[in-house]
Length: 262
Image (cartoon, rainbow, N blue to C red; front, side, top):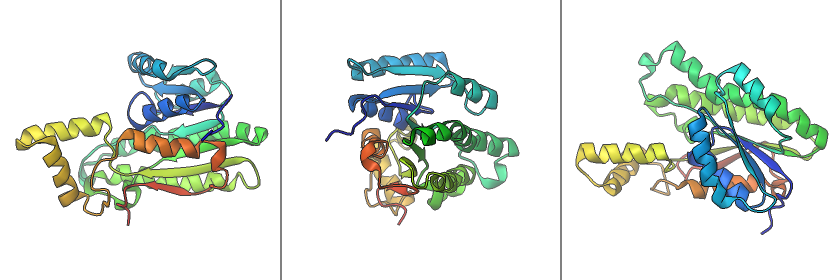
């Protein structure tokens, strides 16, 4: 299937690892140019090295260093970007702690990175897409937007707010070739998840497979998939919703949760 990405450019925030980097790889394979972002030159350079395997004639990958929790850094990044056809608001942070121990600074940090980065990028890039009468904005939320684990209340709140932001922006695209959607991945085997499982396996003197099985039996009991999705599985679906072929989907929440949200 030709996803019709020729000549189009995507910007993916927080894309030096995990789902963001997987989306960058898939977009490159499908013929789009990509611009990635990370908080350090070292992580950006490493990701660009990884992406070299997926570039081809006429398709490029570029990277910018920017801390998207900072408004000035975000503004500087926006000023340096080429014309962007697809914006993937992927960057996000979390802190696993009880509600009572989550400080105001923790709340503010998560809101600034996860929510306000998407607000600022969308505010700058959506008008350009509307002027060109084509574009895609995709917010990467989470199953936690509705599951809300007790130790991730602040994180879950930022992910739920993304759903409202996405739906509101979609209403600004009425009658145009621009769409805005949100996706809710479930438990995904990112580098962070792999480290979590490995450390827990050592702590419990069990195999990683045993720890993963216990997680879905005891904690994420609503999952129908009953395993961690790999980042490529998530990226394939996200890539389709960045494409011209997804024109009939706007203002939607695309569930990639393995059935966990019920």
